[in-house]
Image 1: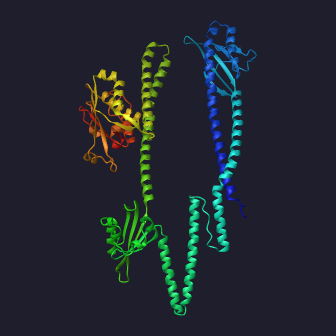
Image 2: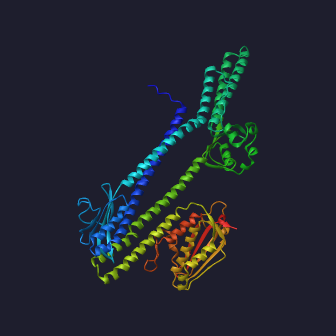
Image 3: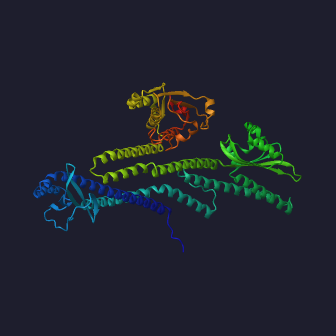
Length: 630
């Protein structure tokens, strides 16, 4: 069955309108869903607030057993038209008062339910405790209909339909006009192609409308017509000359010459059509063939290289691997170099050096084929980097899973255990004094873990937007924050004249805070913390494989006289949730130094540590010198 014809104008118009319609539909759907859940939660919060106010005002009525007063208080809900029922239960759970008074027993619950609010059968209803001096004297019940939500969504639906209608009305004429920028050049080119095909007139040229892909297509089409026209003229001329020589040549010689010419043209066409660099050298390494792609990428014509040696054209290649491989190939060896970085082309090539032998087995020429693999190598390196980042992300996920199943569950288990014991011994003051501090301690422990995890997670999501950061100012702020602890431990925190850098201010503050707080915490004598700054020499940089290219680095040093540790654990302390001491000895979460490592890596640097037991610890932070502000 023949496919129904559809013009490119109609197709472009449909694409634009369908895309616009789908986007509008998805946008409205997402908005409706968001508004639905948000409005339900807001309505629930408003009803809860109103219930708390009425419950607070109802304590006296319940305490003095005055239903009339209770009814007057419940009448306050008449201001909220969506509330259809309200009632109070006394502390025995009996119905004490209701509003409106016409409510039947089937309309409200016979007994108060669990505290809280929920949507049931197209209504929002719930129970609120009435508390007087920490004693529950009754329960308030409120029931609200869904008319407000329905009215709101009818309004949203009307607005959405109006927006869709207006959008389509605007999109149709706009897309109808804009599609001409694509369809007109294509239709014009198709018309030109039809003229050439029907009339065999190769002098016709397509009109170029713009300098884009369609313009390139028109140029290529016109170039093709030019070549065909030239080839037709060449063929006509060749035939004319050939006819004049028919009487001078024999039929056999004529056929042989024609075959040889076609063969040479075929080989030349193949070589010139290749997307690889192809060159042929004689046994003195002079250029014999230099294909069009090679001429294009090197910016040289065949006339500029034919008859010249490779070193005459490219003197810088004398010590290159390419020149060495050419010499090997002259000895009759087939050479393959899977990775050759060309500094002339600034590309990475896969080179083949093929010796061409005569009938006696001697090398008379060398065929060199260079295949551009720059994009493949770059993609491979990018994939390798992404795989490393993915592996690091997976390790972080495994560590997060570990803390979720161990560290976070430990305080939860304690809270549950002590809460259960406290509930069983309710009213026992001794039990309360025994278990309440333990519950509070577990809650504080969980909060510390959660805050540390959030800090570590936020450090993983830096947006890369740096600002001017005064490191001296950061140290001064931290000393103010830890003023009481510094005075208590009789600590001394000194810093050299530190520079200003480009970086993430919050992350650098967290870095200094963690290192200084560790020095204050892990100490048995009066802490001495020294922070210094220096530029890094070439010899020191050679010891670290992180250095990239010609980048220079500076170093921040944090030195203390704390308890230290064995150097064999230097790598372990930067692993998340890894600790060298128990929480009973030195409190903490095990995330601080892992966070420091992540912050330094976000600033393209490296952090190292050197320590000995009871001899203090030395942290070195290497950061790119490009971050320095002079």
